[in-house]
Length: 341
Picture 1 (cartoon, rainbow, N blue to C red):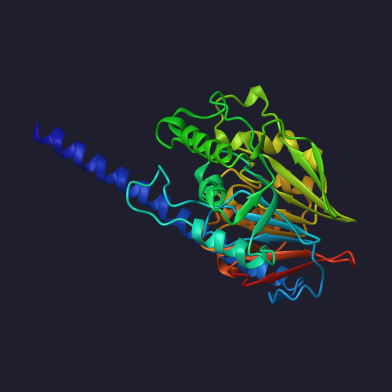
Picture 2: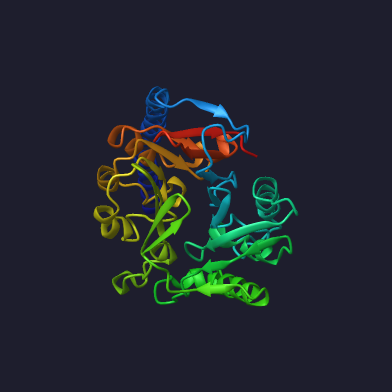
C-alpha cells in the first residue's frame, strides 16, 4: 500500500513538473510577444499625430467621439451640430457584479451636456442605438433616457431574441431585463422605438450603413454578441466601422467581412478580447488606424499581434488616451485627438 501511495505521489509530482515546464515558457513567450507588438505599434503610430482636443472645431464638425468608459462602449456621432449616441457605456447596476460597482452613466451624461447642449441647456439626440443587449454597451441608457435635459427623437433597438443568447446571459446576466428596462424608459418618455432597423440612413454629412440588422438564425445559441449591429460611417472617401462586439467566435466576422469592405478607421470588436479582430477579418477591412474601447493592458496579445503584423495599423485605447475624437475633415482626412474628457 505504501509503495502504491509513494508511486502515486511521485507521478503527481512529475505531472506538476511537466505542466510547469510547459506553462512557464508559454507565459514568457506571450509576454515577449506582447512587448514586441506594442513596440512595433509605437513605430506605426508615428504615421498619425495626436493632439489634445480643444473643441475649437478648427478642422471640422463631422466627428466620432469615442468616450473613455473603461472597457465599455459609448460613441457619440456629431455632424453639422447634430448628435446621435451609439451605445451608452456601462451603468451603475450591472447584474453581473455581486459587489457595489460604479459605472459611467454620470460621466456619459456630463459629456453629452458639455458637448451637445443647446443655448437652453438641452441635449438633442437625433437618435440613440443599442448595438446589442450586453450591459457594458447599453447599461447607462436608462439613466440617459430618464434625464429631463436630454431629448431623444428616436431609438433604434432590435428586439431581444432569447434564441440567440446563451442561457447564462439570460439567467445570470439578466440581459433580457436590461433590454426591457430600457424599452420601458423609452415608453415613459414617449420616444419612438424602431425595432426594424434600416440598412442605410443619412445623418447630416455622414452616410450610415447598418449591418446585422436581422440576426441570422444560424447563429442561434452563439450568444448575444452575435446580435451586434455594426455601423459603417462614411464621409466622402473616408470610412469608419464601429464593430460593437462582432467577433469571429460568434460567427459574425465570417458573415460580414466581405460585405463591409475597406475602411480607414476600425473601432475594434469586443474591446480587443478573445475571438475578436481575426487576421482574415482585418485583411478584408484593411484599416489604417484602430480605436479600442478598453485599456491597452487588457487587450489580448494575439489581437495586438493581428493589429500590428496583419493590419500593420496603429491601435489606440480610449482608456489610455482619456477618450478619442476622430474628425472627418472637409479636406478628406481623419484627424485624431485625445483627452476629450
